[in-house]
Image 1 (cartoon, helix red, strand yellow):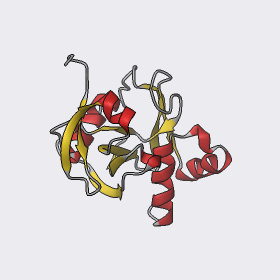
Image 2 (tube, one colour):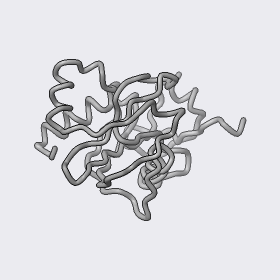
Image 3 (cartoon, helix red, strand yellow):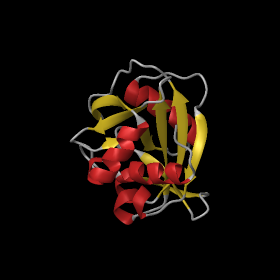
Length: 172
C-alpha cells in the first residue's frame, strides 16, 4: 500500500459495509461505495459551486457541488463532510453540516450512496488548487437556467442532486 493510495469501504445494496478496496479497484469493478456532497449557501440564497480541475478523473472542468468526495474506509458520512469542506474549500466546521438529501447508489452517482448536506457560509474560501479550478456564487435561478441550456456543463452527480431537490421543491 502506497501512502497516497485511497481505500474505500465497499458496501452492499443496503449501504452496509462488506469489505474494503483501493479506489482504483472500486471504480474499475463498479463496486458500491459511499460519497458526500455539500451545498454551501450564503445569506442571499446563492450557492457556491466549484469548477472541477481539468486533472480530475471524472467530470474534469465541470461545475459541481461546493465540496464533495468519497468516504474513506473507516470514516462515516458526517466525518467525511467536515473533512471535504476543510480540504476542498478551507471551511472548518466544529460540527457536521445538516443532512439534506439521501441518494441511492446508481449509475448517475458512480455507484455511490450519497448523503447531500447543506451549510451556510459567506466565505471567503481557500480552494484546493489540485482539486478545484475556481469557484463562484450562483443564484439558484441561474443554475436552473444553465442546467436547462447546457447540462453537460455540470457534473452528473450534481445534475441528479439538483433534479431531486427541485422535484421536492426544496431549493431556496
